[in-house]
Length: 228
Image 1 (cartoon, rainbow, N blue to C red):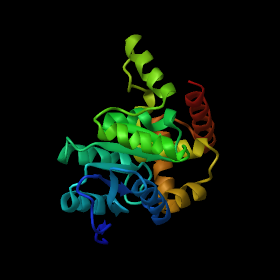
Image 2 (image 1 turned 45 degrees about the vertical axis):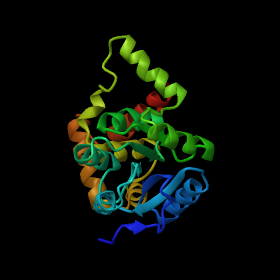
Image 3 (image 1 turned 90 degrees about the vertical axis):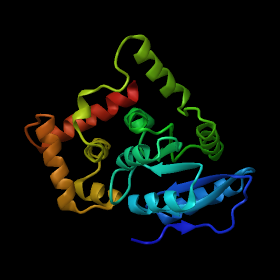
C-alpha cells in the first residue's frame, strides 16, 4: 500500500478536502479544481480504501469525496466503513454512474451527497460546499424522486435489486449499459474471472436462467431507472 499523498502546506482557514479516486489523473484534476476555490484546499489524495482510511487518520480532513468505482472495493463499502469509524465526517460520492442508479444506495451508506463526474465544475464545487455545511446534495430531479417516495409511503431506499452487493450492482449496471465482461473488468480494474463470478452471483440472486436473460434484465433495469 502506498502512503497517503499529503498536499503539503495547508491554509488553516480553508476547509480541508480529501479526494479518494483510483485514477491519478482524475484525482489531480479534482484537486486542481478545489484548490482554485477560496476557503477550500485539498489536504491529501488516496487511491484505495486503505490509503483513504490512513489519510483520514493522518490528515483529519473536514470532508471526503469518494469515487463509487474503486479498484480494491466498492466506494459505497468505503463510505459505510468511514461512516462507522467517523460518523461526523461529511462524505460526498462522485461517480461515472447515473445518479438514478446509485444515489439512493450511496445516501443509505452514509454519504451526504452524490454528483456525477460529468457535471459542470461549478456544480461539483457547489456540492462540496453544501456537504461541508452539513446539508445534503442531490440534483433537483433526484431530490424530488426521493421526496415523492417518502410522501407516497414507499420506502425511499427499497428495491428488489437491493439483494445485490454494491459491487454486483456496479457490474449489473455496466452490463445494462452494453459493456462486455472484458470491458467491465477493464473499467473496474478487476480480472475477467472476478467479473464472471459477480455475474454468476447476480443470476442466482435475481433468479435469472442464463447469460442472455441476465443481459436483457440488466438493460431493461438501467433504462427503467433512467426514465423515473
